Image 1 (cartoon, helix red, strand yellow):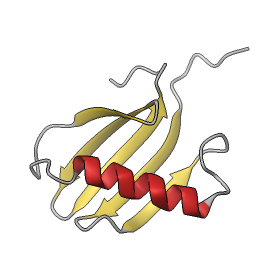
Image 2 (image 1 turned 180 degrees about the horizontal axis):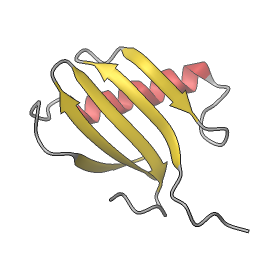
Image 3 (image 1 turned 60 degrees about the horizontal axis):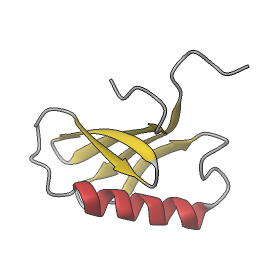
Image 4 (image 1 turned 135 degrees about the vertical axis):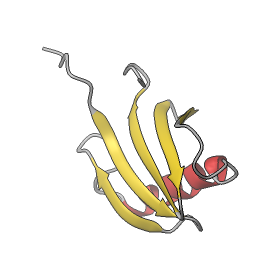
Length: 88
């Protein structure tokens, strides 16, 4: 039975240079593959690094995932979900 509650597949906090501060991956998304996590995070940061700090939340599609992110001070907070989830 599919879940009716939205589910985040990953929550990440990267610094202003793209280094991981905190990361939590779900079981279905890159959980055991540290190298794949690092590659995903580098790709994610390269796609979002030019966003103005303090701007509204932004939404992108990356590797068939919806990513909602917000840049604040020297951190960027990302929430990654399935493309079938509602990003709002």
